Amino acid sequence: MITKRMLVLFIAIALCAGSTVPLSASDQPAPRPGSVGSPAVFFPDKVFEFQPVVDGVKVVHDFVVMNKGTTLLLIENVRTG
Image 1 (spheres, rainbow, N blue to C red):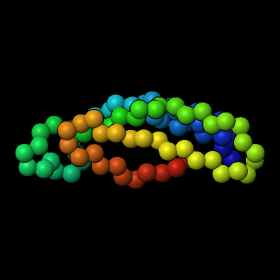
Image 2: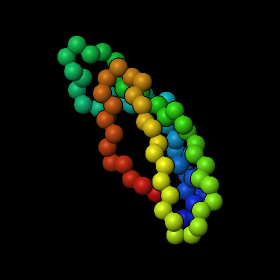
Image 3: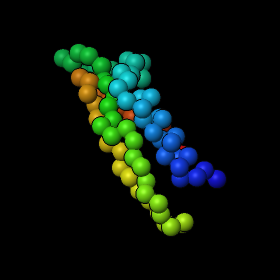
Image 4: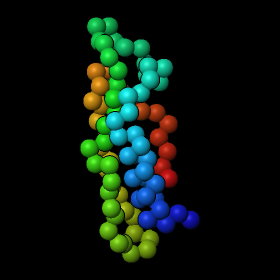
């Protein structure tokens, strides 16, 4: 079983690795007519430190994902740890 600290570390590493990574055009749908450029994923908060909790309590945090690019950002196949 993954401990909460390991999960936080994994999420932090994953978010830092993809903090401002432009995605390739092959990963995105065809651009709309009149649009030029590419999507660029951006995470304003790259790390979130969960406070200690009682074992068995559900903890939740929303990570904000922004598109700083000029075309549609398509997010698919999201999996939790």
